[in-house]
Length: 241
Image 1 (tube, rainbow, N blue to C red):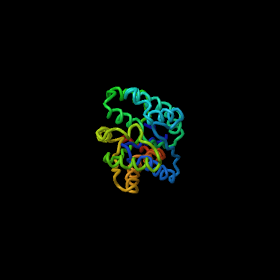
Image 2: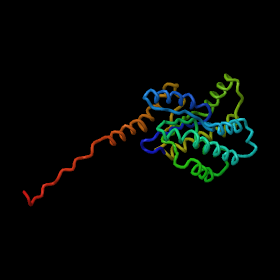
Image 3: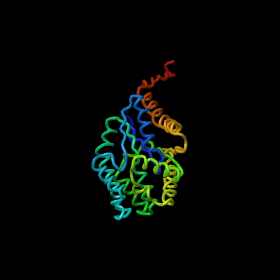
Image 4: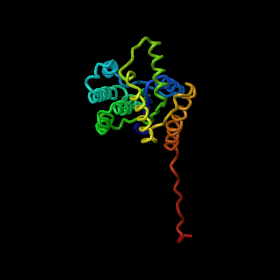
């Protein structure tokens, strides 16, 4: 996690069509209105090399290599993303908001059944290290609703189905369960947001979590740091009384 006095790292997670990109931009705008420098990014991607890997994965050109190879490609993209964008931004005090991060690798590759969870955890330890999110917002939505949203968005943009949107319904149901399991295992880091509410209501739910977990916490840290040291009162020596 980010050290005290440094930037903050927020990730948005969830299945297809849950509204992560929309909510990332809304959250960034609210933080910027507070005078905070915000960097928005995405995974896979976020740096030139990582974007090239993203294009190959989502186009399905790496699918025949198998889940293990895809997990390694996601990790390679994440290494470049962390080194080129995320860590430098956090070091200068910016807040980074990322549309997907390592939890997506755990959920998506896990839903495929390969590689084994121990391998995915080992990859995360090696690649991510201490740069873990301060807050992960998991947008939760029934998969059939999310996929319908994704279909409508894709048709409006004239795009084709990507590598993961085209998976069977059972995959997407398992994916949702895996994201909820991540949230249940790490409640101190994760917050589940009901994404079937109106967009404005989802934004408010996200803001409440960010305010309570990060902004208010930062204010308390700042107050504690600026408070004058306690005055030590000398205890009179009874013998001198």
